[in-house]
Length: 395
Ligand SMILES: Cc1cc2nc3c(=O)[nH]c(=O)nc-3n(C[C@H](O)[C@H](O)[C@H](O)COP(=O)(O)OP(=O)(O)OC[C@H]3O[C@@H](n4cnc5c(N)ncnc54)[C@H](O)[C@@H]3O)c2cc1C
Image (tube, rainbow, N blue to C red; front, side, top):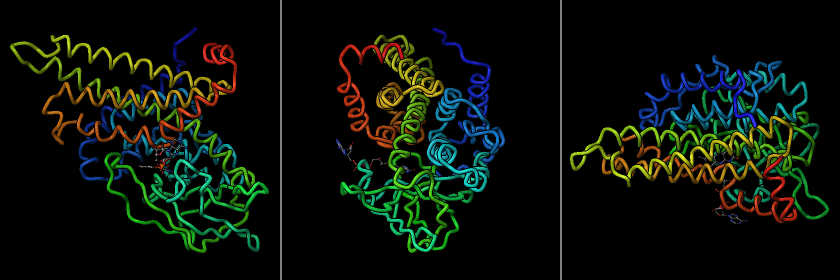
């Protein structure tokens, strides 16, 4: 096996690390406190090619591979997960489906302005009554005289209301199948479409500098050619979109876990009690060792899933495994980092308190831990025990 990164992958990781440590980390506390969308940072990341890292070069993207993207995302999230999720939602949720399923005309019109990161694109699936159960989508799109007429609403949609948001791809019910199940399709809705409005942003536990809004569609008309992919394939497209998104959320979790270890190590060698540095106590050493082991494992799971995707192989089970393990490892890391910081870690001014607040969402967004465990178990139960082992070890 070869664990070495390619020159390109190293380039993206190092570029992201340098930028994140010098330009993001120093502002993470104030961005969170002021709940301010980081326009300047996103604009700089766009100039560096980070906001279009995996998107096709012919439309202005950077053409990087999925491993390089996840390495970069880890570094950005290590500095601030609000910036990390802004990058992830834009690339994996907003733009990747247009790159994968869009017509050439759609790519020219909608992807090209976003593939550099100059504009952002959002992905709207979740609704009041359709969270984990996306089949419960109530937003409708009816084809009338060559136009889709969209009615309904969406909830918590990332990057949907910034000054540079160009639009959203919304999952809508376009009919009913013979089985009685809804026919779901993806519709491209530009930001300035009459009848498309956004509600105020939310009061959140974390990701406070990231942008989420409820969206409302009222008699909202878009041309028939704004259908993304095939009619009735919206659900399948969305599942494929989420597989890749899960690897990326796992990378984001690894970045946050690493930030917790960074802070824990720094405190352990600086804080003295009983005349010693607390790093000299075995109880503290074991916490540091456990954090490091879990981060190492989570990072390897992310990279394996990302590598499988780059190789064009099946990676859904590995994506779910990486997402569950990395998000839960990050939660444990945040908890132990606060413990090592003691009372100082309970203060809002400490970075670890911020990490402790921010970490929870990773177990919820882009598929909860429960649903990902179901995906893993279902895939195991569809194979013999030997096949399951074979497929996990030697892909
Ligand atoms: C900050 C933020 C940003 C987001 N950004 C976006 C975005 O950009 N686009 C978008 O479309 N969505 C977005 N979401 C929505 C997110 O993807 C959902 O929150 C997530 O899918 C879970 O849905 P829910 O919150 O409605 O939970 P629910 O579906 O209500 O689940 C509640 C609990 O029930 C459990 N549960 C549900 N069904 C089952 C089952 N069958 N078996 C076992 N347990 C089950 C869940 O695991 C969970 O623990 C965002 C959410 C947040 C908070």
